[in-house]
Image (tube, one colour):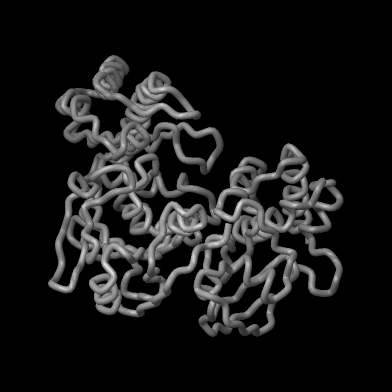
Length: 156
Length: 290
């Protein structure tokens, strides 16, 4: 067990995970933040993507102890007032998702990407999301949602 | 798949890390970005007794240019190198390969030294290191040794690093004037491991090729140079006929592996096409850099 302190969605959290515990399991099991989904658990599917210090990372490929002192944002931290953020609303309006399993990873990856590339075009968005697997949609509706969010961000 | 039980050490200096390696030797795995090692643990393909996490060693990160070389600390993250002006200006082949590694979230954590120490023969960085004759700096309790890329890659996921040595730095030679580069790969999706990849670099002096470097990813259990094609190219002027012949020589005596992504013959055909494409792009790029 290793004692750690980190910031998650703006709040200071502490815990004592085993070294082998991934950040994904720590978020879900120790902090009860089950919005982060675990698909493949070896870095292939992208469902567990969270934002650490401003960068999208796969939380199944990072140890919880490595998050000590870091600022972590999960899907629960995007719209703390219970509403939807611009990206979430745009994805809702575009019917981006079906079953919802890949949703948190897609949304976190797209959030990190749009904050770095507010003017991204369709091809860049497609490439940015290429590490997130969706088995329902065929991706087009997801890309449409991210494009719509980028457009709405620019209008604001 | 949860990770197996493992002891965990997090040294904050290179000296501490080396002491730990000397103590645990091949019972230890060095944890850098974890983008290859953590999956290996999850799948039980690696079962180290101890993880030596070097993420807290600040002295292992950074990009610095000295006379004719760019030194990149082993823990330098791939996205940092990707954004580095120094890398873009002085090692254009590396800059061309970096955006092709995995996906954005992988490059957030993945490191230059980690990828090269993992030595996956289908990965981008090993081909770049082999093409450019990069140098690997490793340290053990008795001091430092420098290993040229030609002797670094020994086999599938195997390097000449001794169990008590830590890879601390990788040095890439600065591209000379008139050097054009291209990194080509064929993969089913962006970010997947390449079925075949090619790192290509051509230096033109007054329209004549003075230096040619071609290294394949995915064609063997190590990244391989296409020496016969390089010999053909040097002293010649770029032309379609020349590049066609180079593609034949580069792939003539290769025996690439077959897997569910492609047969050996298919890989050979792809490799030849990549040589033609890569040389054309590198030659165009070299003209821009005269």
